[in-house]
Each structure stands twice: as structure tokens, then as C-alpha cells.
Amino acid sequence: MSVDLSAAAGRARTSPRRRARVARGVQYAVLLAVLGLLVATADWGTVGQTIFNPAAAGEILDRLPRAFYNTVRYTLAAFAVGLSLGTLLALMRLSSVAPYRWIATTYVEFFRGIPALLVVIAVAYAVPIAFGVAFTSIVAIAAIALGSVSAAYISETVRAGVESVPRGQVEAARSLGMSHTRTMLQVVLPQAFRTVLPPLTNEVLLLTKDTSLLFVVGQTPEFFELTKVGRDALSTASGGLTGLFVIGACYLIITIPLGLVARRLERRTGGRA
Image (cartoon, rainbow, N blue to C red; front, side):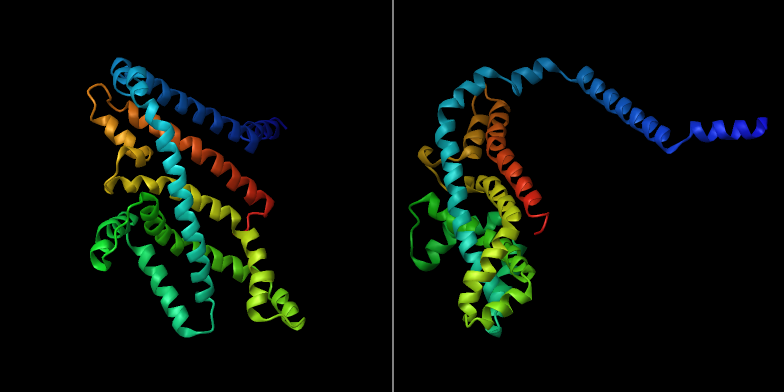
């Protein structure tokens, strides 16, 4: 009987719940040890002077509202082009006309396969040389360059949304005498966009960060976006890395709410995408 009691006590000591508590305790201990090591070894004097310097942050505060506004409008312009062109490409890939599918597939594979920075440079410098046009607005460059890249990704998202609409919905609309185009516009696309809203919100988030690529375009201070202001702050005598941290905080002001919206939409749509 004593042997049985001992075995039972051993099983109790190593129950799954107890092991889980021990594992969590070890993880918390390791996390606290790492955090303590970082705090103990950091040179806080240099950190305060180089990274968290209030005086250096104050030097760029007057430029932040305009840069913040420019970043938002570049993002919205690019998303407008990306959504319009991406929807068209999605419909072309679903078309029964083979050349449409070939063109859309080639476009998507091309723009998904090259860096967005190259597209920005091409639109800003190569396109004016090739076609004899001049872009006088940074908004136009952002819309065309970033919107073209975004369209390749949005098209795949929209196509997946269209294909997720039950076939019975289409058949029911056609049986009522609706044309293919009317069925697509009034029945399929509204349902598809409700499904793909979360990934589209994430695409806006990505475009917000991609506006930083516009630093390669010659800009006047009036058209600076957030990253350009941060890069210029690096060249000041007392700037250090403080400017970059301030700019990072500004991006978080935009991206964190967008992330919350995307997660809320995912919950409302049941995680479908």
C-alpha cells in the first residue's frame, strides 16, 4: 500500500497543470533576467544623449505636422490607385478571355517580384525620360509607383474574395435575368469586399510604411514625408538617433489604429480572407 501511495504522490507532483506552472515560472524568470541584464549593461548616459534627447526632438517638431499630413495623403493616393487597378486585375484574371488572364498574370508576377524602391525610381526618373512627361507632384509619383506595386497584391486578395462567394449566389442572380457584368458588380463584388476588408486594411498599413521609399525622389521641404524628416535630423549636430525614434512614434500613431481596425474586422468576418 505504501508503494501505491508513493506512486500516486509522484504523479500528483508531475501533473500537467503543475508542469505548466513550472514552465511559465521558468520563462518569467528568464525574461526578467534578460531584462535585468539589458538594464544593467546599457550606457544610459549615451542613450539619453543620442536616442532620447528632448532638445533634438524639439528641433523637428515644427516639421512633423506637414510630414505627417504628406505621409497620409501619399498613402491614400497610392491605395486609391492600388484598389482600383487591383480590382480590375482580379477581374481580368477571372475572365474567360485568355489574353486578359495572361496580361493580368504577367503584371502581378512582375510587380510582386521586384522591389518597390525600383518602381519608385523608375516612375520618378525613367518614365519621364521614356515618355517625355514631367511629374510635378510627389503625390502623383506616390500614387503611380506605390499604387502599381500595391495593385499586384490587392488583385490577389480581391480574386480570393471573389472566388469565396458561393457559386449559388451567381447562379441565382443569372437565373433572375441579370447579366454577367451586373451580377459581378451588384452581387459578387459587394460580398467579396466584405470578406477582404481585413487584408485590405493591412495593405493600407504596408503602404504607409512604403511611403518612406519616396526619399529617393527630389523633394522640397513642403513635400517631405516622415522618413525624410528623420533622415535629415541625422545630419544635425545634436540630432543623433532621436529624430528616428520620434519619426517611428509618428508611424505608430498611424499603424497601431489601422492594426486594431484590421483585427476587429477579422473578428467580425470570422477570420475569412
